Amino acid sequence: MASDFQSIPVIDLSLAESPETRPGLLEQLHYALTQVGFLYVSNHSVPREVIQDLRNLLPRLFELDQEAKEKVALHNSPHFLGYSHVGSETTAGAEDRREQFEFATELPNSWRDGRPLYERLMGPNQWPSDDPQTRKFVERYIQELTQLGERFLALVAEALSVPSKALFSFLSYQHRLKLVHYPPSDPSLGSRAQGVGPHKDSSGWWTFLLQASPPHVKGLQALNKNGEWIDVPVIQDTFVVNIGQAFEVVTHGVCKATTHRVLSGPLERYSVPFFQGVRGSLTKGEALGTLKDYFGTKRSSSEVDAGVHIDSAFLRGNYDTWGESQLRTKIRSHRDVGRKFYADLFDQYLNDS
Ligand SMILES: O=C(O)CCC(=O)C(=O)O
Ligand SMILES: [Fe+2]
Image (cartoon, rainbow, N blue to C red; front, top):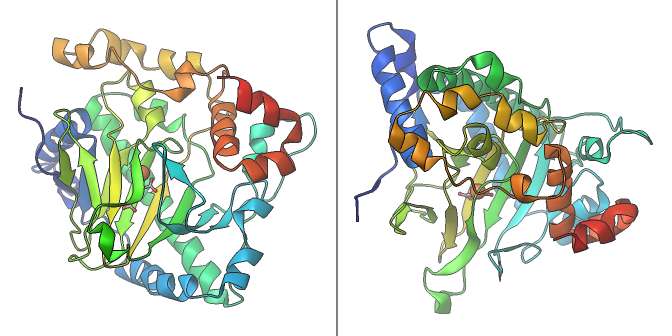
């Protein structure tokens, strides 16, 4: 079997600043995008203080008592924003061992009868603490990551030789952020407990992940084409970046959303994934049509071959827009929210497969 990636490339974004080093950076990025689907970015320009403030917040929020957490429970939000407890999610058929607070770009609830229902995914956050710093730190972090996401996307366009305008046209103005806590696993399970099971990121365009625990706390792994799980260790002052499913679709599978998982071990672990959002009105036709010329004919034969199989619930599903496909996924994984806020659609979404 051909060898495949055994480690995750580190891309130094400061190399983009000089005309001497930029071509080399783009070449490394092209390799990471087309052969790995996972990378680290270093020298990313997100201020250290913004990251540190968020990191300090994590234990404080997860130490809140259960009552305070339940007050902002995700099941009270039609926008799927808020707290979910350990055991409320399953991935790949098994229960995940993690609790999380989900936030998004702060937006008013502007959905009205007659508008597409997926627009209701946008709406205000539930803030878990009266401490005004919580909101300040989370919002500032989302703002910084939104900017990093845009800078990164411009480089991706250049590395793939596609118009950046086309890539930007797929973006939403709502991005999502999760604060995640993996409690220590039962010692009898060794280091093999499921923090989160094998998955591809479905909700975003790109994911920018902060591994917020010290380097000796391991857990994240990416799957290479040979079926080997490759460790994605903590590298200080970097973000882990990986491709989401919508990006795999628009690049016709040339850039794959790589499967990954988290094993939880005897040490608790914190992480913060930021999911750059995709516009809900994006249709299948647009997603496959916009860059067809770039990913159909202009590619080397090995890249075109790689694009033959696109693994996407969006393309397979019965609904034409990205927004509807997202809403369906969310309702199926949080059925209580579906029953409460989307009663008219609930049965249809549950029984349409
Ligand atoms: O916690 C991590 O390191 C990764 C989490 C993840 O893959 C996800 O939430 O999609
Ligand atoms: Fe993920």
